Amino acid sequence: MPPRHPVDETFLALPLNALAEAALTRAVDLGCEHADLRVERIRTQNIRLRDARLEALADAEDLGLAVRVVHEGTWGFAAGVVLTAAEAVRLAEQAVAVARVSAALSSDRVELAPEPVERDGTWVSDYDVDPFTVPDADKTGLLTELSERLLAADGVEHVQTTCMLVKEQKFYADTAGTRTRQQRVRLNPDITALTVDRATGSFESMRTLAPPAGRGWEYLTGTGWDWQAELAEIPELLQEKVKAPSVEAGRYDLVIAPSNLWLTIHESVGHATELDRALGYEAAYAGTSFATVDRLGTLRYGSPLMAVTGDRTAPHGLSTVGWDDEGVAGQRWDIVRDGVLVGYQVDRNMARLRGMDRSNGCAFADGPHRVPVQRMPNVSLQPAPGGPSTEEIIAGVDRGIYVVGDKSWSIDMQRYNFQFTGQRFYRIEGGRLAGQVRDVAYQATTTDFWGAMTRVGGPQTYVLGGAFNCGKGQPGQVAPVSHGCPAALFEQVNVLNTVQEGGR
Image (cartoon, rainbow, N blue to C red; front, side, top):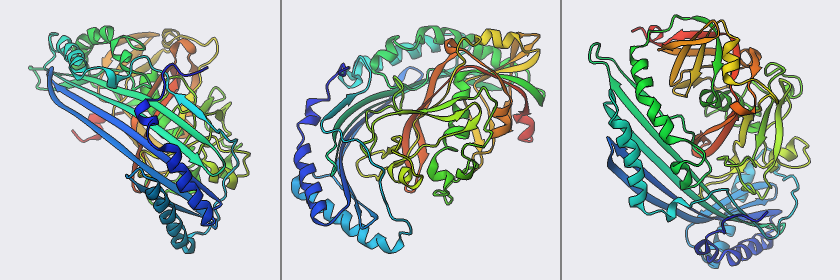
């Protein structure tokens, strides 16, 4: 099916094919086994309001080209901003020079898994309204209106509103003959209300649960999320939260909503199953993983109900693409099946190292000046076909806590010991919600936590969460990524009281 929108003509008018021909021809002449070129244009807009008043509106555009080569089994890379054939040739020569210098430090020969050639590919993400065609006054006007509605409610003292919008355009070409053009649109709106209890002096905040999404401006006007309904609920929920009792530490059955569980998936499954981490590539920088390659096919990651996929094709996913930054087509595959680790996220070099037929398309650079590294796809916990609703899961819990929304988190370098907090928490007593509690954090090891999952919600509970700012690499790069999941029940998880843990 052809995309609903074309790639912008202003991007296609750049000398894309001429740059590719110049760089790749020179790389071949210099004896490279492989070479690829990326031309990228990334436009970013940030809008920030405080108490319904515009505080900042900033636009930025990053445009450039990068050449990457494999020369005598060693990577070389160079990037620039001048879009001429002469510059493309110079960058190819510089990338080869880098490879020659690096050869003495390289212990493993670079070989890339084969990939079918896409000679003239075009892909555009699924959106209705390009946010960069909407006048700034209209965008700030809508955000002001939403802020004012929340600020006018009883008990709301302050409102902070932000919205980040991104349009990413990319041309890729390699010496095998692949040529692709892509365009992605995504946005991340966030509205936070703050209240103060004048009697006690305590204060609390509550953020909208709407996740960032691979959508256009229609997301703010009601497609994919009911902003009006959520904003209407926040003031009363916030007033209840500020007066809620502090939790009693202990073990509880936890019913975790997708708005919280997505982050636990990201940290304890997403990062842990990056193959470069599992191989120890990032040991110097918050890296490594307990899910090492010798445990593939045998590691009991969680209960038999646990099914996790990697996916570069999910509709509106932040990590959804037509092709990755090595020309690999978007795919979907199993990472955890029946609770057992069965797959990793790989790029073309790691696929060859592991004897795989092809990469599953997980190479990404966050701009034209960065080298692609192995990055996360949309990593998602699959719902149970015909599974229960959230209300049905709660009804089966005698004593527990219902967890909604993400907040702070902590996890060790091996992605094994962790704790997470949330936006709000409800006591569950006799199968019913019995009011909010505060100061909650849940703590576990990855395998104990996922092993404690005893009920998985049906497709009607499934929500695609995620973040714009997944960090990795040295120098650091950020990547957008989504994580879908249903509501789920985890039995007898350790709950901490954060005030007591903080010595307050």
